[in-house]
Length: 78
Image (tube, rainbow, N blue to C red):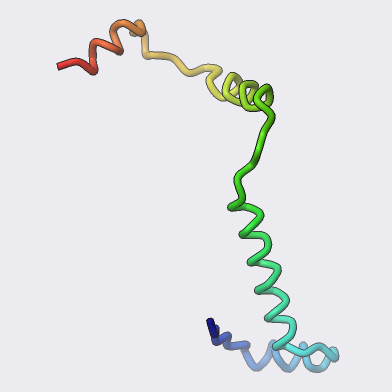
């Protein structure tokens, strides 16, 4: 895949003046962003006890709105 990236002239001049190659910096930035995206998208594997603790922590304060479980089951029936 080819990607065309337009680097503003002012930025390219500043980078070149400091001795950096704008094309190499842009490629490095894209590689870093791709790595971060891959890490963020990777599934997190937890130990069963950790997963259970997370579930318990997330459900604190969650209610059925004053209904019982039996009432909620009845709502799903025709």
